[in-house]
Image (tube, rainbow, N blue to C red):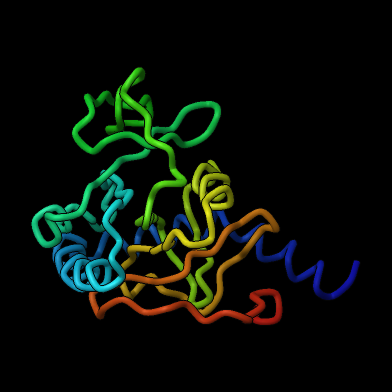
Length: 201
C-alpha cells in the first residue's frame, strides 16, 4: 500500500469518531447567533452575485440555520430538498411538508418538483468543512451525488460555524467540495489545490 493510500485509509477510518467529537463541539456553540451572522453576510453575497434561486435546508440537530435569508434577501426565490431512495429532489420552499423517519422536516411526497439545473446557489449543511471545501456530513452521501450533478455555474456554499472549519477533513473520491464557506465571520472562497492526504496526521 502506498503512503498516500495508507493516509487516505487512515483518514476515512477516522470519520465516525470525528463525527462524535465534532457533534460535541457544535453542541457547545451558539448556532442560532452564528446562523444569524452568517446569513447577514450571505444575503449580501448572493445579492451581489445575482443569485435569485436558492436551495436552503431546514436546520436539524443544532445546525446553524440559513432561514435568516428569507427576511434578509426577500427578493430571492427559495427551495428545499427532499431525500428519497433515488437521491435529493428540489421543491418550492412553501410546499407541504412531512417528517422524515430520522426526525427532520422535508417537502412531502408528491410536492411539485423543480429542476435543480435552474438553481443559482445551494446552501449546503454539514457538520464541518475544511479550508479546501471538503465536507463532513452524516454519512448518507445525498449531497455529494446532488452537487456532482449540478451545472458548474451553480454556487455551492457551506454554512458552518467558524469553529468547525478545519485544516483538513477525511475525503473519499466521491466527495464533492463546496466553492464558498459562510460563517459568522463572512463569506469566503475555499482554498483550492490543497490535498488533504498530504496533511494527514
